[in-house]
Image (cartoon, rainbow, N blue to C red; front, side):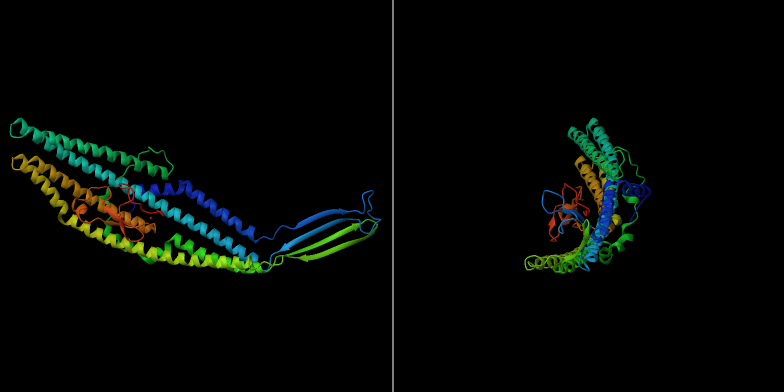
Length: 441
């Protein structure tokens, strides 16, 4: 994945400081601590007692049935039960480790997304600075024409209006940029208002074409924590079936006792006991059926996750290829043509051969094309982040039709496919599309 020095530092700090990661690691330790517990024998039982004949006197040593007793017993699970319980607990600890792996991937993806959006916002703000400079020049030309009697006052007012609109957009970008900085500082447990310097913009990132080979369904299957956890759950349910089948066999309790009768010879006792599965039809048999049903459900979950992972990786690869073609169109002439149109229209306005409305329209088109180019670069990196995260979230696709021809000036110029493959508006966009939740790189 493309990474600079600032992002590398942010990633290291976030992975070290995020409390959710420490929480998930602690839960792994808790699951590992259960393994030896479930494999241990039940605690033995020790009983002390006194038996006496009558209530008027202590008959110990005088009556045969009066004695002080000391008894101990130990329950032994049926052979195989302890091993199966230990295997279940071990698999539970392994599943907890997959939760840690998912959280690490999600943390890295969230940091990368927030950093990417920070770069995008700062590039857009720099673009507004450039457009504002053009607007100032246009306003000066409109004022000069108005003072010379060659232009209308409405043109001067319109130029001032457009400058104020640019300033309004700037403040919105500044507020959004501040929010991204706060999010990055939250990930690394730093003061929320601590500034984050960026040395480069989106245009300086490595060319996206070099990362086209990153999309691989097989690699996604190998790296997905969800799939690994589902496979562990499948194995756990199979062991649970075997454990349920052993429930027909009782745990045996062995007991021994010593009865001290004073002057009389002592007595001793040995016994072996266990529960009888008289209600196996409604208890043990149903437990086996339950475990088998859960194993079947776990097997279907594995199959569903494998299908979804292949689909998401293929969708991201298709969208990435489309974005590469879109970027090629921008680079091969669209951006140059847009800038040339803006400069030419303004030059014509200065000599009275074009209206101010034409200048403003050309400026708007220039801004739309430049922002569309930046958004396309950002969208490509979002896809790379989602692929590295092994995200199961629906893929974003380049917009088509009127929205695309308008230059993609919206913050989210992409439609999103849900799990059924049908188009829907990006979550929150207004709200921005979710990059991964599992989320969720």
